[in-house]
Image (cartoon, rainbow, N blue to C red; front, side, top):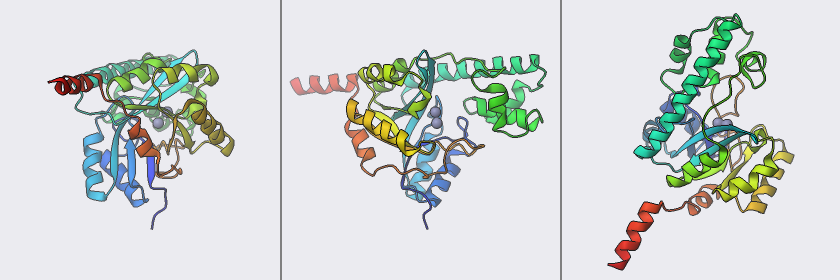
Length: 290
Ligand SMILES: [Zn+2]
Ligand SMILES: [Zn+2]
């Protein structure tokens, strides 16, 4: 019996701010009928090998991906990067730099919370993260279990969401740099849940010029008119409409695994737009000349 749709291109594990080990996440997706799943942990590809191995046992094709969150004058743009290589050392160097900034940001939020009288420790937040790349969900969990907030989800609105008292802005890439990083490493970038971008009309032409390939049209929190707006942007800018659950397994964040319809042609369309990395292209052309 399958409960979900077969394609889910946006999922998170314990390697970032999800609640399940990568293998358990894939097993749960498989049980719901998912056959193609992208593991898109924030700023890391650390869960990919484990997820791929589980997928091979369970008949799920796992796509190596990451989600790069950016904050800028346009609003919050999250860029998904598909078909990245976990063995790419230069890419890992950049992701490590992003993870260090994530850690520093959470540390600053802990300091702010303590100054406001909410006692939480960075050590406990790191225990909750179990080595995964640190994010606000881990902090929300720590606040909840310390009894400072009535529910996990309420921690965001009352304390750590944007404009809430303990919020600290992200330091990292601009959306254009995030797209560029993914393309430079042979990946395929898609703009996640586009309506977190405040000035979307302004950002779209810039981000498309930077190399954007997809736009996340199919998303749990999108009512039909939002999906329609994304599909219209996809037509205007010749982008591939992508989609996924954004499942985290914590609080109300995201839809159930495989809970969002994604058209069957999506993955082939993304792969067809994958650019050969410059080094490989050069090597091939040199070979061709000899
Ligand atoms: Zn996101
Ligand atoms: Zn996400």
